[in-house]
Length: 261
Image (cartoon, rainbow, N blue to C red; front, side, top):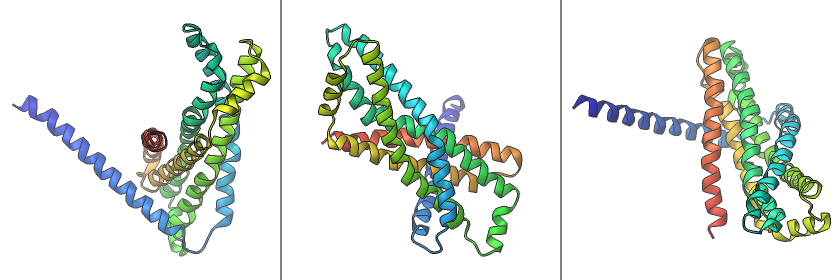
């Protein structure tokens, strides 16, 4: 019976560990939310976080979006040609980028770039006892380190998603008009006529949620990292993995909420 019970016990232990981790993350998230409304507000830290999360992420977001939009146009054209439906390229590129690919790809890029950076930075501060020094100086680490970064994610990532949506649609437009023979004005008319206000709203709302998740995971894993270089590495890897999984899960839930009505 052991060969049957042992895998079940391991599966149960993994499930309980996952629930415990979700509980700790939830407590940390509620604590972060509570500290957002407390003084003092570290505006300089917020400005630095906005620069790191928003401005410095623009190149990778722009390149990701333009290549994705171009590839999406080619794929839709190739697939539509099998059913004589090549004309749907502008509509599908627009809705695909705005509803799904834009927010998700930007969220994952932020998880790869920003989450890892935040986790490594805060974990290093913990290893070198800089966080203990903040406590000694009567500065709450969550107020000083977590709140500005999470606020930056909530503010900047929706903007990045909007920029990514526009650049992705532009990438599809360039490929469609330059390679696939689409008329420029007709393509643009079909694109904007097909999009609805709720498509744009859902895209920006997803960006805010994904930005909050990405920055929160970086702060959480950084604050709870182990000692030494190995602890910093484990925190960085764990933060990116958790952020990516939670972003994809949140995308599924939000898509159901926005488009099942």
